[in-house]
Image 1: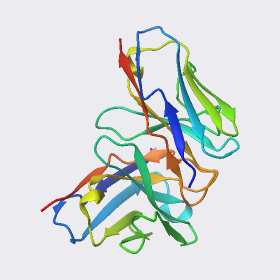
Image 2: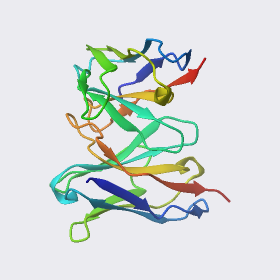
Image 3: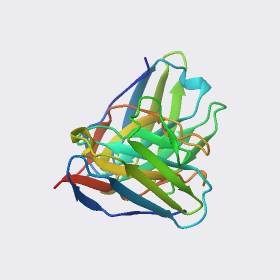
Image 4: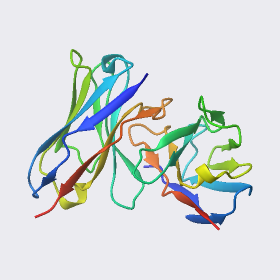
Length: 118
Length: 108
């Protein structure tokens, strides 16, 4: 059974940092495309970042230079490091399989809430 | 970036109704279009991909059509568990994969 479980969300002040984790079971993160997608309160989902099986990474313009996606294949875990957090980064962050042309998001975690506020 | 526009933003319907939601892309995306269902407090769930292919386990009352810039999600006979918000998403333009603004299906 495919399962994705996020953790690490918290209340943080503007300018702060946080690391989100997504533990995966049922498939290997290192052999597929994995993304982070966020959803601000009352808004539609927004793609944030993707990590290719080959190691390539891409980011939405809104987070480029501040967020970093990575994985630990031994732990079968995906990470998202969030730096320089802004109020507008407040959202539920989901990890999801997919995120490149030809591959929709076919499996999602339950999400973890990041709140940026002073 | 490709913009995705959904209509209506809110729809009131009754159990048994036929429901249609439309999604328009700002430029052609072929058939690289997915539909998701989201219920409150839950993650989006993939219903349809490549515009018209039903994801495994999704009831056959859901169907999708379209290509290029205009797409449609149809629920042939609305069931109580179908009241939710529906999002379209294009996965043609990389790396900026964009979602529509959502269409909420409410109980009439």
